[in-house]
Amino acid sequence: MKALRQIVLMLIVLAVGVYVWIAFVPAAQPFLARMGVYDLLGMTPPAPQEAAAQGRGQSGGAVPVVTARVAEQARADRITAIGDGRARRSVTVRSSAVGTITELTIASGNYVQAGTIIAHLQDEAEKIALEQAEIEYENANTEAKRITQLETSGAVTEVRLRESQLALRSAELAVRQAKFDLSQRQITAPISGWVGIIDLEEGDRVNAQDVLVTITDRSDILIDFRVPERVVGQIAVGQPIIATPLGQPGTELEGEISVIDSVVDRASRTLLVQGSVPNDADLLRAGMAFSVNLSFPGETLLSIAPLAVQWSSEGPFVWVVREGKVAQASVEIVQRNSDAVLVRADGLAADDEVVTEGVQSLRNGTEVSPRTDAASALADEETTRGGTL
Image (tube, rainbow, N blue to C red; front, side, top):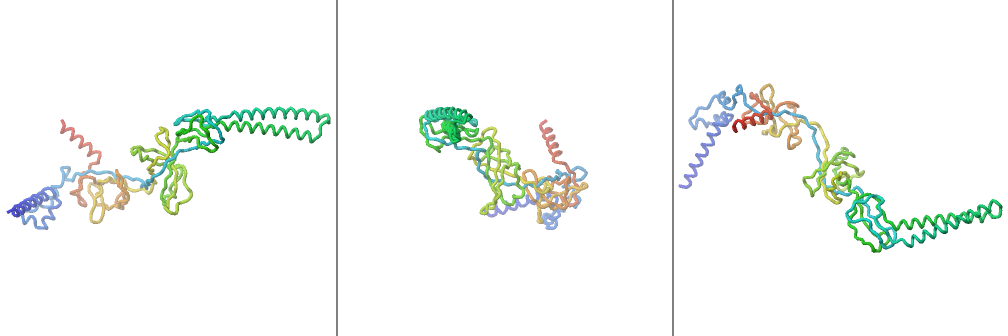
């Protein structure tokens, strides 16, 4: 009994499906007639003219369709790479002398200008040495003047004159050395930038080459990434890039390629490239990871709306409107974008109209009443307003 109910239910569903097919798909009526469905149901198949009329609209007997214009667009070869960011300049400041820190003039995280004194080291011994060198210079200078005056009277030998000049020169060098030693007790910022974390305090003793602080100029962020060797002939310095920090997915930054390496890596067959991105808002930091996008313009292709592409057993095609009738034109899909499909086609040209909506009843030579996407949208809007009123 249960099996009988299932058979009856299947027959009802089949009958409803056949009815829908006959009533709402006029193009299928010739096929149903050849299969003998009408004879089985005891129905008379409609005439071809009647079947065609069922699929036509009210605009002069033509099928209403929505069309879009064919455009031209350059094919874009896109490359996405992951790169590491680093500051434009970063300097590790080290002590050039041994001594005790008597004063720290900066704090962690502050911005400093080039030449700013970062720290003072104990310098009393150097000041004493400078004063002593200056005294010796004054003494040597006085002696040299006296010997020069005596030389005019012939009371001084040439050897004595030479010795006084050498003593004066040695005293000058001693003063210069003392001033240099004193200058080494003041540590200055070599570049302008942001100060990192300082792990020192006043009173700490440092040795020569001890790290005092790191100063980073992050006004621009440099991104090192790699591109495949196939684009070596297309990439160039100054080419624009779009960089997205992996930690900030919604942020897109415009930059440009600043440096291109001269050697392709043999292992990966890639080329090292360096891009530069402005950091005016100071949102980026050295060490961040970036997704870098580059586009290389290629050949110019036909651009059509994605809805215009149809498929048959022979491949993709579009319905192109010419003189009020449609014709099938085969296309070769080259690139799919979010808003357009780039194709090659012999039977299609720029500014042609292709059907995007209403393709169900179309055959080669079918008369159509086309509306553009803009006109269709306007008509729908007016219909909506009328329904609201």
